[in-house]
Amino acid sequence: MKTIINILIFISCFSTALAKDSLATEQALRPTRSIEFLKPVSGISEITFQDHDIYKWIQTMQLDNGLIESAEHTNFVSLYDNAISALLFISQEEIEQAERIFDFFYSRRNTEQKENGGGFYQFRDAQGNNGSSIWLGDNAWLLIALNHYQEVTGNDQYAEMAGEIEVWIRSLQDSDGGLWGGIRVYGRIPKVTEGIITAFHAVPGFDAFHEGILEFLKKERWDAEVNVFVAQPDVPRYNFALDLYSLGYLIFEDYSQNALTNSDRFYTEQTSSVSGEIVKGFCFDEDRDVIWLEGTAQMAVAYQSAGQFAQTGKILNDLRNSFVPSSKTTHLKALPYASNEGTNFETSLLWDHSDSTPAVSPNVWYLFAKTGYNPFQTSAKKSIPSRLKFWKEEHVSP
Image (cartoon, rainbow, N blue to C red):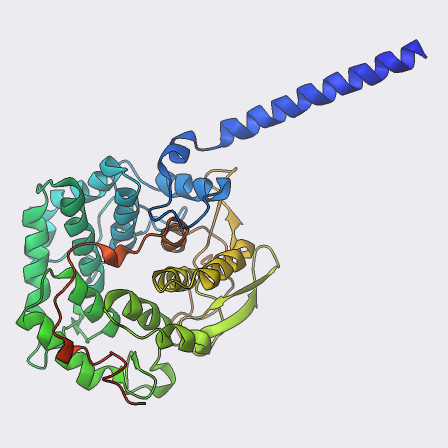
């Protein structure tokens, strides 16, 4: 009997020690620095250990040169991904990490920016070389981040760079008020609605430039029956794009919440390529062959901005089945770009591993939603005359 008791005591002590060792190991793997910094901006959402892991994963994607690699082991860097990452860092008071991003682009002012007339390349490799195409939307996002940095810190060290981007964006305005999409090797990029509305917000204030944009949008890119911005009226099947629903609501004051409700046209269910679980969310377009996880997280931010917190919570909860393991940092998980293999906007296929490798953009927007942060709340509100707000409910068709 005494022997049995001693064995039970030994097992109990061993189990307790094992549990303590397991807890110590788990705590050692947790990103302690990000736990200190990742916090709700508005106090709306509950921050979990998983959220801290996602933030830590984004931090690990910052290279020695300051750039954020867009996805693991890709040797691919996106200007857009770096701009929204800078906004995330600023929102979390990680100012130095945002400055590392800005410093890289500042170092290219006398070559790349001036040679391009004011804009930076959309894509490049991890070393910062072999840039390609200069897109309006990506540069507008960088301008938003730079403006917000100066607003938060009071530091104007990047003001000249921001001013040059603004001048370049203004130079893209056509006589009809629309903005050309930028420049690539074989010529000018057509007018892209998403880039135009982002630039509308990015360029400070409200003047003839902004009024011209509104005139163009009302005449060329507004569907008065559905009350949303459209992508390309000449291609009916792909006239509607998910990001125009979410970004339209986030950017324009007094925008109807009907745009969020009508986003059901993109809603779908797919099977995660990695977990095999059912994932619910939104596609890029109406072919609904894939769940665009970045766009789905954008919708969560839009619903949150509208005060529809239950819907925000549902979207974020549904995204849980989409997380995939990091191959770079073994104890971390994050969102890939898409839930499964499929097409991007229109019919072009998504890149290899877009459904199985963690990517920066969906995780940044996921954390925007979890922390209650709307990147378009940065900078001063525009004093848009009421007569020009064609999207307001009293201005639209019943």
